[in-house]
Length: 138
Image 1 (tube, rainbow, N blue to C red):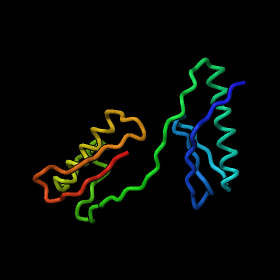
Image 2 (image 1 turned 60 degrees about the vertical axis):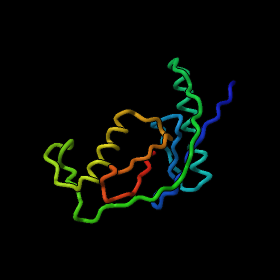
Image 3 (image 1 turned 30 degrees about the vertical axis):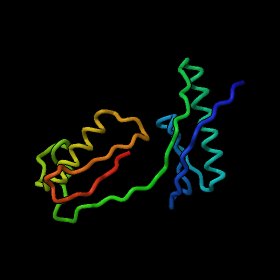
């Protein structure tokens, strides 16, 4: 019998208690009403997942280092709202200020390059923009 170690991320949730994910096993999600129950549910879910991978002849992924941090963001007021039924979602984009469009395009491009989870990227507006705020994307 082999022992595997995995990092889990436990997030308090007002409606269900605690929400649990495992960065090394994307898609593995569970929850528990108490912290102890959430940890037990995570151990059970990970064990079942790993046993299934072994049965299917799949490699067991290495644990991924996880960094939890907080960031501050600026959110545009109502005048810069975007129509989410538009553009890549099926129609025409509303007008949005260039500085927000530039940041949005950069974030979409970064996501399209499939940046591994935990990678930090700094997104800054162009030098000519009046907005000098910087966003960090994880």
